[in-house]
Structures are given as C-alpha cells and as structure tokens.
Length: 211
Image (cartoon, rainbow, N blue to C red):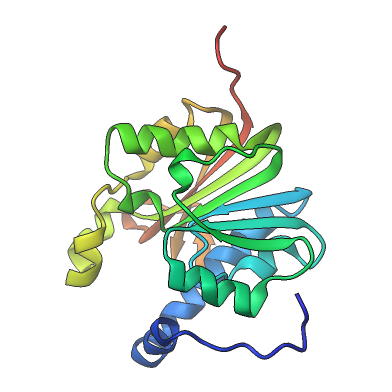
C-alpha cells in the first residue's frame, strides 16, 4: 500500500463518520488489539474485512494479508484505498474458503451475524482450516449483555450473540489455549465479563482432527 495515496471514503463509511464518529475510534481500537496479538504472525487472513480500514494495522506494511467480505462495494473501496504488494481484498462467501497457511486469522464483528448451528460450525472450521498449527486466531463480537443498549439497526443483524462462557467454550473445541478479554469503548481489559460491551477470544495452537 502506498502511504501517499489519498483515501476516498465510501458513502457508507462517510455516513457512519458523520453520524457517530466515536464509533470509528472503537473499531480502530479493536483492530489495534488484534494487531498486537498477531504481531509475530507472518501472514494474516481477515474474515469480514469490510472496507479494509484495519488492514494496515494487521499487515504492518510487510506481511502477506488477505481480506474477505461478502459486500462487493466494501471490497471495491478496500482495494481502491488499501491494496498493494502482498495485500489483497476479495469478495466471496468465506464459509467455503480454504487457502490455509496463515499465521493469524482475525474476524471482528462477524460471528454475531452468522446463524447458530451449521453456519456457525462452518465459520469456526474455516478459522481452523486456514491457520497454521501454532497460529493465532482473534474473534471479536459484542457481548450478549450489551443487547438492551443496541440500536434497532444493530439488533436486526445480530442474530447470534455470545457471552464470555459460550465464546470461550466454542473456541476451546478448536484451540488448545483460549483467552477471553473484555472491552469497553476503546479500553481492553480483564474485568467483569457481564459488564463488558465487547468480547475478544484469542485462540492459540489449533487442536488436531482425530483420524
């Protein structure tokens, strides 16, 4: 990515910044945490990259990076603004994606939009299938306890909410070690989970399939 290239906001992103600019600071703080966790990973896969606003933090200018998203307009904006050598964005259904070999897999604000059951199981299998054996996966999602404070627009799309216990137990089906972190606004912490607006699960070293 060329640092001197001008950034052209999509109408969607421009609307969000005008309507609620503080939300952008929250989103960037989530990416900052994910980038710190995956700092030593040589390559990054992001599931649900949207317009790629966190890509530069994740690839740090020198890593292989692939961002996937279903939203064609968002992927177009990501390629326009942030694509470059080793950095690419693709439109597609990542529930059937398998390229493998990534040191880190990151997915923020995605799992709550994926239906419970078969689709959820497939989502976590995609995480596992695309990360190396000793890799790291970071999944971020709003806490179910934040639901009463969500906007009507958010609630329509949030069809699969997690609390800390469910998020941890689900990740533990696929990774040897799982850490849960809390987040309120821009602050990541290890405080009382039910009072956290946002949750991160960090999975380290995937479990091997039997047989």
